Amino acid sequence: MNPCKMKTDNNINSFSRARMALLWRFYWPTIKVQLLISVTLVAVGYLLALLSVSMGEPAAGLFAASTFIAALPYYGGPLLFARYSDKTLTVPLPATVNEKFTFAVLYTYVFIPLVMAAVWYALAGLMSTVTDKAFVNSVMINYINSSSDLGFNITLNGTGVFRYVNLAEMLPATVVLCTVFAARRSPVVSGIVAFVICQVSLSMLGGLFGGIYALTQGFDDALAGAEPDPDRIAGTIVKQMLGALYWINIAAVGVSVLGVLYLRRIMRRVQI
Image 1 (tube, helix red, strand yellow):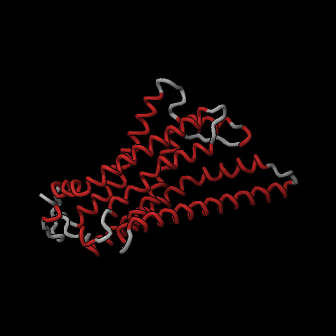
Image 2: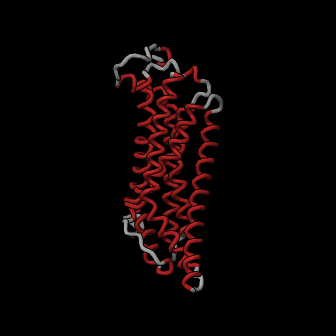
């Protein structure tokens, strides 16, 4: 039976797992494509990360690029709900607003991250049989800690610090999710543009904080009559950024929660 042809009252109060299952069936053709792309991107990202830490000296730039590639499925997961640009095709879906909202939230923040983690750690476990650098996050953190020129130390272990940072990644995913549902035309393009704008804004914000820290350190050096030390200044910037990580993540999660609440309002208004 085609779920699109079934009718439901969007105002009923009951919550049905059967209708949630119908939503899964409706989106399954696109989910299969997303799963294939997600597995591929995470695998490519992990292998590049492994390459970056397997060099004579770990390549931080390549490692950063590899983790960004591996995170793309998280950011792009909400594009599932842009399958149809014409929302009149999704309004009659046999599910309540609460069920559609729950499905979107679980898919974006639970299902896709679990798939990504399963692929990443499965590859790490497999590669651990042939190399002692398979758990690339810990290797990179240990390398950073051992770089005395930077003058700082990351106390979180490799796995912990990246799990911590991943909280902030909720924000771009939330921006894409809300944009896809709010867009009246071209939701795929709108979602991608929103992601790019979000990433650029976050990069600019990080650069602004870094510049402030650098100016502050340079001013302190000048007052102390010390010669500017670029390595020490770089270390101070990173140390200050790591110290602010806790608050950055709280802010990112807080904005994401507001975004999810806004999503609920959108879905109630347009009944999708």
